Amino acid sequence: MIRIGLVNMDTSHPLAFSNFLHSENRARYTAIYNDGFRGDDEVDSFIKKAGLEARAGSIEELAEMTDVGFIQDCNWNKHLKHALPFISRGKPVFIDKPVVGSFADCEELVRIAEDGAVILGSSSIRYCAEVSEFLAQPADERGEILHVYGTSGNDEFNYAIHIVETISGLIGLGAEACSFCSSAEASGIKAETYHIDYPDGRAATYTTCLNQGQPFVLVIMTTKMIKQICVDTTSVYKTLLNRICDYMETGVNRLASVQALIEPVKIMLAGKVSRENGGSRIPLSSLSQYKPAFDGDAFEKAYSAAAAKLYL
Image (cartoon, rainbow, N blue to C red; front, side):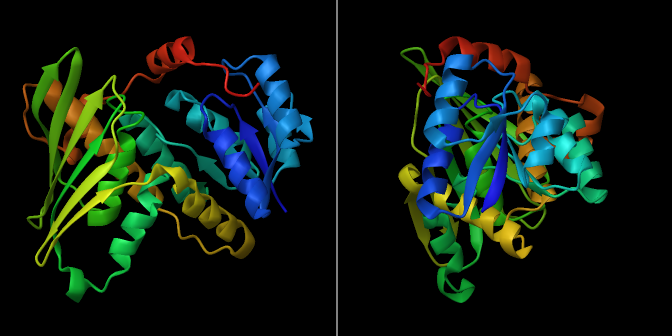
């Protein structure tokens, strides 16, 4: 049985993951370290209901007693710091989405991966059944991808990273630049659209809807067809968690590489810079001069203020 050490239970993911892991019987959350906004009442309830063995007094203690770390803070600014005790002990780490949220952390993530850290992550939507089935079709049948359009709701980064990761998973590495295209607003709900271009002529567009839940929808135009996907989110964790378990059991990693995890973050950072600069085309290679970041601390403050008690 794979022993998972959970660092913070800010979001609903630990609850949903735990239910799936118990049904598959390959891995378990076995201990938790919590210094997030969830109170002792929720932590104690989760420990009891999910059958955890211990509440660790530090992440270092947690890393000693488990096989893999699951970093599940809602504040992406904390992710690398909370992953390091596992990494320093040679243990793999799953970092929940968004894996990081700044250009500086993207660069640091690459550095620690080059030093041998095993980083597993991040978006479950990247591995959804609908996308996996599309990619499994022979290329000569489905054609070459020309353009992908994707939608997401709720916020500009924490949730929207799902759709940009999925677009990146479909098209592959090599995005050259991102541009802010336009915004639209009605009844207090705002949508923003961004364009991603690739050096080989392919392109992608994504629209985020702010302060309103929306489905993940993909429209994939190929040289032979148009495929529309509305992602079924009721079963999206299955492939992600099974691939993590596969890695832990066999050493074969079928999850996205660190480069594949950070490119969507850089795309969205470039889009943010573009929006702040009137829609200018921002090459990903130019981000070092801007050093952009999404504000994880502000997101955590707003998220915690609105969060219901999920774990009682």
